[in-house]
Length: 222
Image (cartoon, rainbow, N blue to C red; front, side, top):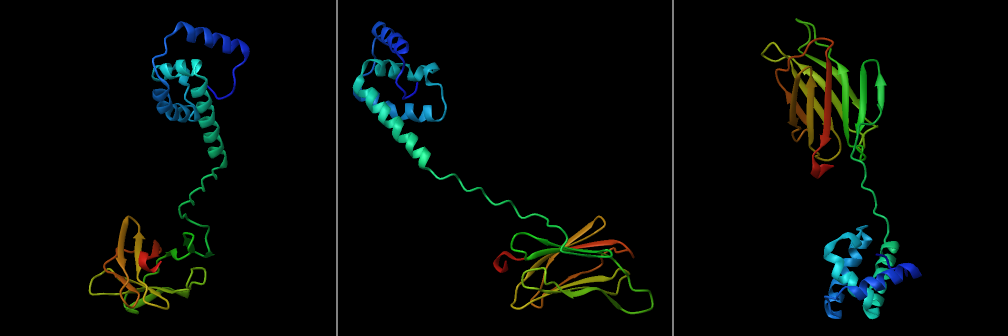
């Protein structure tokens, strides 16, 4: 059923059906049911085939006043839906951007729309036995990242056979960072301290192995 006036043949057919079928509703009952009928039609429901609307449709066939109210309600709803602004699409979730820096085996990616989180991939270069007790893997300011933090990666030989990986994220303020380190099948996570340092002890690193370090500011600092 629609709010459009039927043609003469349809009107005659409906009138004949109405005369042959008793009206089970009075006007007060019918008007209480009209909003649901209008909503169902607006949602694309074929109300003519549903038994719960049969009595109301029969009443509308014989009551000009209720039919006029139905037409008014349908027109009001159509106008309201037409005036409604289209829903604003939600922003896409932050994703992995193209490399912001790439040289040799080093790759820097900036993560997310705020450009605060980042990921660095680079091959491990272990210090030679009997030489230095520490080795720098990376040390540079990251202007590609919002806030331009000074980021350093270094290895420090501890008491055990495996070196400690030291991650430092330095910038103005006292922001803390969540740091995730992946090397081979091993993944670790830690939070930087007040000096912006996170230490990963006893990582099983091999010379030339790809190391991936992901840093994200804690929510209160993002």
